[in-house]
Length: 155
Figure (spheres, rainbow, N blue to C red):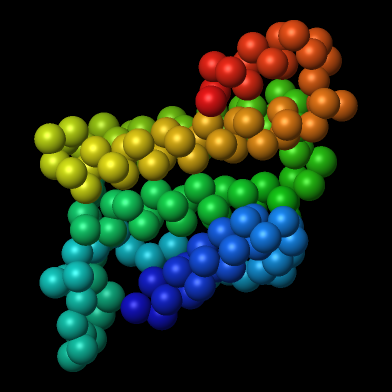
């Protein structure tokens, strides 16, 4: 529950900072809090002696875990590889994240289940947003026409 609360605060802080134009506020600090376990709410109860076993595939946590995965990627890439905000190395890292999300979450999703459908759209939108992030700055676009076409495809 503490992890769930922490990551919700980080998510809200990050989004408010983004909307206000202040930049990443909390993301500039370091922390090592893991994202919450992939378990249903019913797997957690007050008298537990051991942590619940993580489930494989989608749970009630799929939507928020996908948000946290993308936010954690952003945080980790700024801490570990500040030089990789653009260019091929950033694209390779995003490709790796996308493959992991596809394998761990999206391959199990049933598009007829509303939570799964919305979660898969969130994940794909988040990946595109990561890819678009550095392309918004013209100095990172080698060929303006090619960069504009890439932005259009990602959007």
